[in-house]
Image (tube, rainbow, N blue to C red; front, top):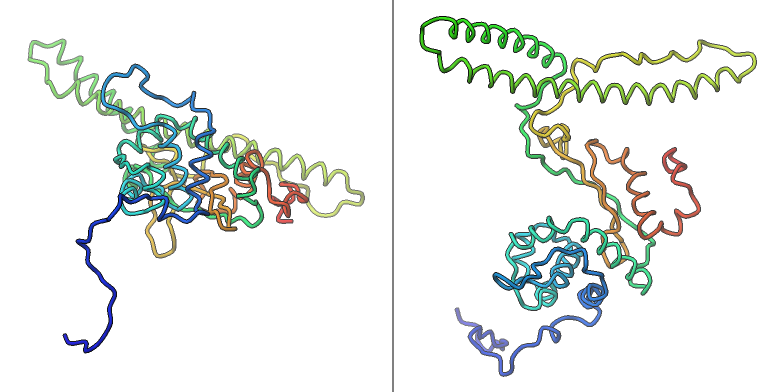
Length: 343
């Protein structure tokens, strides 16, 4: 293609550097990386797990790994695979990682093995950011995202269905046990499938027993909560003069779980939810995060729940921030209880 007398800047990708590059020259002076590195250097690392015997392959310094995770999270990079890739592509991440490239397994293992120490260190860094004025807790953003559980919908069971299956398995186990005892009493060889079948069905029955117990315990907790609410309503009703209308109806403390209530045999802590009306229902968790919306994008607190809606966990998420770095000024004048009431 002919461009006539057009003047272009040189785009020679084979041009070598005249001097060795310094990443600090490529990173703005006000980049968050400088603060994260300085803060990580002041964090107590005694709780982090390291190989202090000096054996084996050289390990990455926990100070660098801590700074790498915090800087990655502050920039919305949560996946260990994405963080590994960023050590090659992102100048800030590459600077924090000291031009090294921990693989995703190493990053994930460090985070997993030092979860408690990491959470404490993260809070220390946030408090340092607040004290130095880098983090001004004014406007914050709260949002949730659905994280898939390691469970399938086909492993879910309704309470009424679990009850039926339990009784059927109980009868099957009794029948198979009788057949096994009859085989032992006779001269015929033992049918090898019988003991294995008994074990298999007994294991399934144990899972269903546990599932029913979970649902019944959940129903009991709900009944206790309803009882507290009933007592409050009853006291308010009794205190009124010239009472009108029917008194509050007491809850049934021994009511079984609703027949349609489900639990999952693989991951009983998860719940059925969907990301939006355009997505299918899947077993998942609802992860909540509070993020500083005034430039730093630092994560201030997190919560995980099994309620599909964000609203029931709003107060808990705010309280987590309150016990950590403190509430924004406009919320300090309001109690968390008033937030819960929608005030």
